[in-house]
Length: 133
Image 1 (spheres, rainbow, N blue to C red):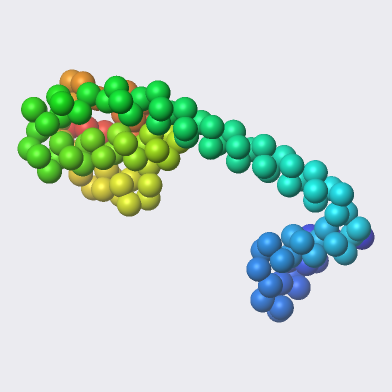
Image 2 (cartoon, helix red, strand yellow; image 1 turned 90 degrees about the vertical axis):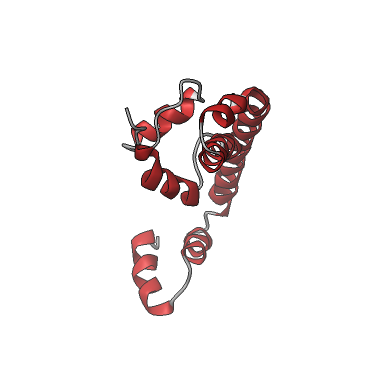
């Protein structure tokens, strides 16, 4: 049996991609059936993630308290706070890298909204990003 470790070592010389190494592992070890089973499990995992994204978006987007943000904050801040909520929901409970970086750089200077999407506040706090007291 050819180990994955051997193929990874060879990868440094051959320049193959990670996916090519994994494919070769299954082919060279006559494990295509295991690979097919793995594809099935990965498909189920991806479907579950997509369902969660859809659920979050359908359930919450229409209920976000955006009116409050636009009444209490300058337009540019309200827009960003609202965009953070939408991005969080559309991405299945995570922020895109760009908006996460914006949050890291700016949230600490913004007073926490009295009305805001609590799961997003928790998500930010887990990453040590906190609104100004």
